[in-house]
Length: 630
Image 1 (spheres, rainbow, N blue to C red):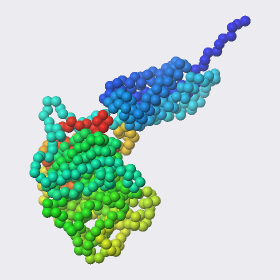
Image 2: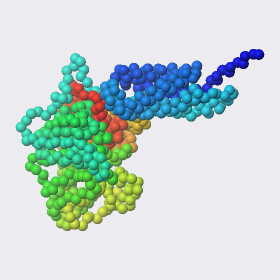
Image 3: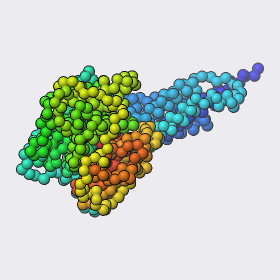
Image 4: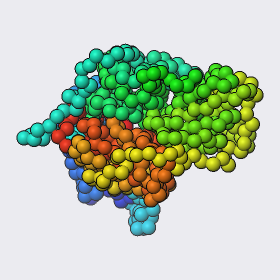
């Protein structure tokens, strides 16, 4: 009798092999893509990712060339180990590295990689334990069977490697010290000692329960406390951080602010960690309406409540009988005013009233500005961004567009009877669709408003049909040395957007001159120069472009020059497809951000810096330092 031949084990089907190999090669590509970033962060981490990627590539090749039960069991065990290590790093944190036992952030590349690894595990099990049936497989059936795994692997590998290649920098310095070249550190650019009257405040950043939600606050309120000081005072503010994350304070719009006090994490300071404090000190030489807010993880921390008003009164005190700050901001149900939906301010007939309107509303992707309207009294727009306008005339009701970060001061005389009302006509854009429909049908009812005085409310016209205030043709012309000077340097600022990868995620990437932050080349200036910026908005969005530490003189919009009062601002609202020309005097040495104050746009890349020659910073942005200015 012949000894029966033991049947040899059949190979797994080609569709199964191809899918398993692709779902192994995909994570390998992602691991190799993130390796350079991890080498910067911590060399052993970089070596681990290179080793993991190389082993996974070798396993994928072996699955196609020499598949075996032992190979698939080893691949499954290795993949389980990698997934377990990933989960540990995102929950408890690993015990080694630059930040031991601290959970890491979850990114798109992580999710794509781990998804493929989890999907591959059952394929490995099937390949290792299921006995294949010998049969002839038609090529079309093989392709169809392999299609789901192929599409999943290709899509997730593309997303994973794309986001890994455009990940948040480990470390980036806007102006590093160059060996052999003299430089001045931003730390030395502080307020000179003096005998000015000192106004001291303490702002404690902490979590507080407001409106049934947890808010991040200065002193337990949203907005934070108003800081009201007098021109010429030395302002000394101590930030005490009781938040779970690092934070800073930026003094938005204050002219002549020393660079060391600008509060930009990773450029002018290290963000203040939880449990620590920092004192800011500077002299307020220019009266006006300003505000303060966090400049660490700005798009998140402002939205959570870290902002407040800063008012600098002239030395002789307010010239009006009533002087109020009206701060528009995101509330629990749309837009709020000073923490409420309807604010009432006292005033008597015949009194002169100043309303300092500050827009701290974080808009959506379109960047639509707020547009308050004053009803019930003729008024004058006496200042924009804290800078006085020359010869302002009285106006009837007009919609005053104010981009995020901008301010407008309105002055009026209370009528002999009845109240005056300020209504924010753009707030329905920040409400739900149902709320927007109700608001549109009902006119001003339901919109956030400010009532000044007592008595009958003024009649409300159709708000959407009111004319728009045009600051370029308002008031009386006057000399503006910066606007009329021949510029020493001119620079284009072209604003664009396109889908892509940025900061480790898929975004509508926003670009300046074809680059997104932090890769936008800085503009280098020299002290004493007049610098002209030609801003071109090639998007359908609004971009309130804010320049730190300086005042911009508006020259023209869409080629049409200013014909009224000089317009001098720190934030210029560039509408969809508009072109603006502005100029500034380089009179405040430092490293200064120039960015869109729509927080989403800045976070998506619409940020750059204007650097004075010879100035450096010891601080860096990125994951290693934890400094994230936007």
